Length: 420
Image 1 (tube, rainbow, N blue to C red):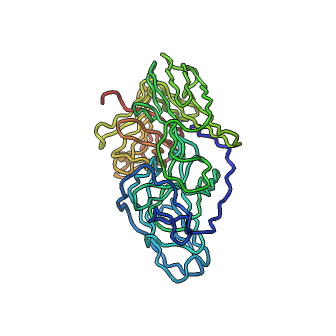
Image 2 (cartoon, one colour; image 1 turned 90 degrees about the horizontal axis):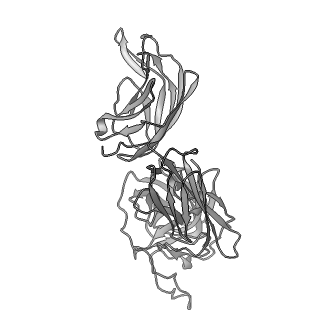
Image 3 (cartoon, one colour; image 1 turned 180 degrees about the vertical axis):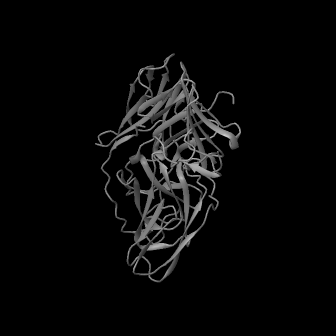
């Protein structure tokens, strides 16, 4: 899936004074007359609640690092940042940041100030920037006034899929999207019916290249120039900060279609391109099996009305393909099996004449014959759509006592059955 392409030169801002970034203050610094905190006007949100296990480590004046168990967040504390051994902890919390990405994190002890800024690094995935672009990601922290503030000095490494910022103090911190595209009416998962109309709108939360802390405020008329483009069939009607797209009334020649908007910022050399793809129709299943690429884009569907008995199905007049699973979750990898159980799936390919291949069966003198492979759910919103990949091999159903068979690879992007 095409992603946003960003041409962004961002310098690493070294914070030489911690007094300009007090996590729990909104008043001028009494020790520095004339200094003021950023404008406190911003989106007020709830305080996050603990979710998941805490990780902790004792770090002293020599410095050190600490990461969450999933590697999503890493904290690097330089030598001299703390003057004594300190128990440092990271607690995952629910994320209420304006257009926050993933989980937010509470760093403890709360309010800890560093003599030298630490470095906070977030990992991101393709799904995290599906309606934005990697270099429009930012990092923010929440003050006691419940307003989130963007932190300057970010570095985005697209190759490593990382966003890093200098971190002068502890509080609740989160990754968020500074700019993104939103579809009016809530259709944000990438499918349109034939002839359906959708409106895309640009939303700004913070400045793309901010040089000072600023409160996160949701704006639908960003201070930027815009240029909208459409690749594919259909009709695009642009406005400065919105564009209306109407899908064709039949299967387009190119599917998905791509809508993009280029943002420019006055005399700045910075450009940001946000991209959104829409698949017209019910979706597709594409597999390479038995030496042939097979594409199903008619009669494909996701049926997960009963989560324990869910299925992804596609086919044509001569063959049918299905993946049966139970209680699937986004990010899960389901191992091939002869039945659908949590964490496992049954894959089946069948010709109309009865010839069948599957991911496993249990009728070889009482021994289970299970193929080697898995199905990965890259994105999954129950009742809406599922996107993922398949890889491994299937077993010829007639060859009962073997675990080997022809290889299968492929991908799928399928929407739920209407009115299921």
